[in-house]
Length: 144
Image (tube, rainbow, N blue to C red; front, top):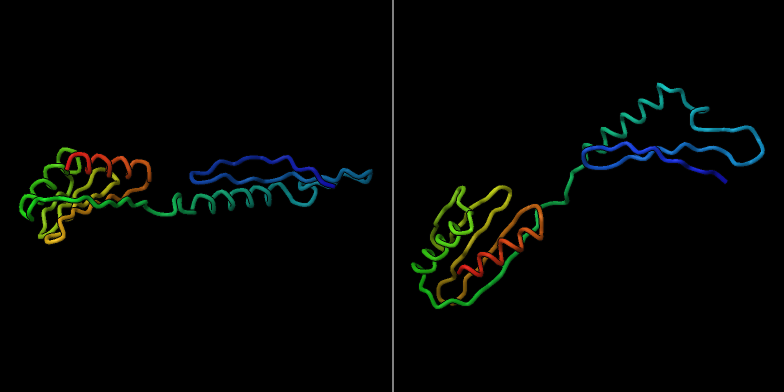
């Protein structure tokens, strides 16, 4: 049987564990340091740390979408969409297009799309944290 006492090396995106293994039998102690020189152990630790830092921090952006009924015509819908984007602070790269209004704040991007003839408006918010994307979504819907 072996016992492991991990040493923790913190990276920017993960933690690497290096175990010191030794025998619990009555024979001579045979540990990781007996098998590797300090220089080799240092190289292995450095390589593992660099690899952990190279891994992506997140799987990707989260996206929140929602539909809401509206009685506004296309022009009024686009005006309201622009106004709520400004009210919510999504003003960086604010654009009003034929059917939609989009804007950004920090790492979050939002779009309000008016669907003429269907009496609905579509809200889309994307960003790194699902909880914050959902809050932006609720804010936009509440303001519309």
